[in-house]
Image (cartoon, rainbow, N blue to C red):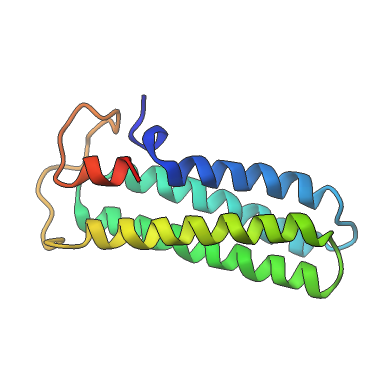
Length: 143
C-alpha cells in the first residue's frame, strides 16, 4: 500500500475526480471550462499523492499547498458553471461540499507538515511505500 492510499483526503480527491467526470458529461460547448476543471481536479489527487510520498516536511507541505490551491480553483470553476447555468445545482453543491472537506484537511496537513520544516535531510530517493518512519506521519495518515 502506498502512503497516499491511507489518506482520507486522497480518497475524497478521487471521489471528486469521479464526480467531476460525471458532471462534465452534461456540459457542452465550453471545452475550456471542462478542460480546466478536469486538470485542476486531477491535480488535487496527484499533489496529495506526491506530498504523501515526500520525506522532507518542507516539500510535503509544498505539495499539500499546491493541492489546496487546485481545490480552490475547482470551487471557482464550479461557481462559473453555476452562474452560467451549465450544470445542475445538486452535483455542483455536492462538489463544493466535498471540496470544503478536502481544503479543510489539506490546511491541517500543511500545518502539520510545516513545523520544523527547515532543511531536509536524506536524498529523497525513498520508494513512498510507507516502509520508513517519519515524524508526524501517523497523524496525517489517519485524518
